[in-house]
Length: 217
Ligand SMILES: *Cc1c(COP(=O)(O)O)cnc(C)c1O
Image (cartoon, rainbow, N blue to C red):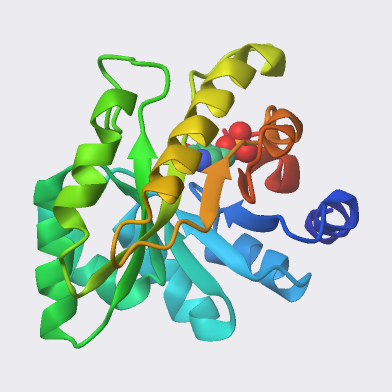
């Protein structure tokens, strides 16, 4: 099932769209099955869960962190992950930068945008994104590569379209500023119910879990 779901999905996706397979709450064995079906990137929300799966899967694939990163997990996270998609404050950016400096690594990061302006959600507000990017552009051990957004979790994927479109506008705006050290390349938007709309609005990374593994219990 996992293999068929992946083959089907990969055959549908435009060539320039990267699939991140979201492994939250899945067993390492399930994730390995996905890897064997030919995926290239795993997305993890939890550092501890990632460590367990990493022990089985290792560096056959790239690892993207897509959860809310806590300060006390940064040191472990920078060893495992090849990209951190959810940077939303100068504070966490500095912590990642410092931990990467200690192990001589340069971490590609995305800025998470709270496109729905939802109070309880993580992500930087759209109006503060430019300032954050300028603020952290000088750090040597991280590289801003683009933006990520969740958008509000809604039933109808069409309802997510304005939030994806707004994130794309911010992406283009920051790209046009041509800030030193910043190459805007990735726009990570869209999940199982919304990835088609996200691609129409310019996503080139989509993050899919339940469509591949089945509903989370
Ligand atoms: C769970 C999750 C996804 C995938 O959601 P599905 O609806 O299972 O495809 C994508 N991105 C993030 C940040 C997630 O936490």
